[in-house]
Length: 195
Ligand code: IMP
Image (cartoon, rainbow, N blue to C red; front, side, top):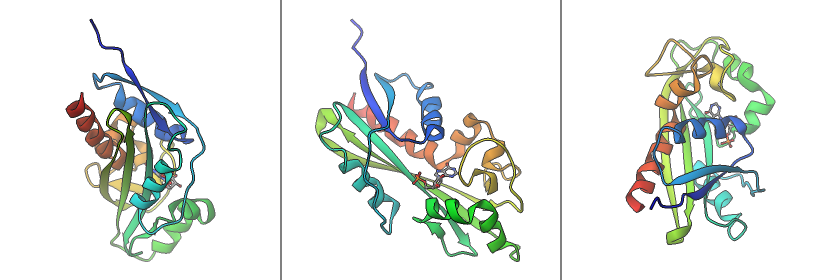
């Protein structure tokens, strides 16, 4: 008899993130079904994405039945901004935005940037918390380009597809190389091992 699928919640208010993960999830033959939960989490300002992610995850302990995960990401301009905005990514996007970032780097020929994603999972059958990380390296575009994606996607050129910004890729293409896709594939590996 086929085993009944368990629900695993992705707690996020960001529909773009949920759609990316849903797209990845559909390719896997997993014994889970995935649902979005918009339950309120508590976000802290910390010095690492992992710290933010774990705090957020623990802030909903006891409020959901079953397994659940959250995902926290950051955008780091390594050259020439020494990793800025990093943990301040959301604030910077909402204040100076992509145009503001491009203004800061306008006089530099060489740029280097990366996204980092941390998925923090509470796995109910084992009452365990696990963290899965993914990084994508790339450079900055000279102008804002593309209509897809969200956040900093229109200014990021991934090293693996250096002619297009994340916002010029399909969800599938972005997932194949992205920080979130990489973290997600580690989560899938974990779920398969524990099945
Ligand atoms: P969050 O805290 O994980 O939601 O992300 C911090 C900031 O980075 C937000 O402003 C997001 O819009 C942005 N961000 C997160 N993931 C991505 C991505 O995959 N592409 C572009 N921007 C992103």
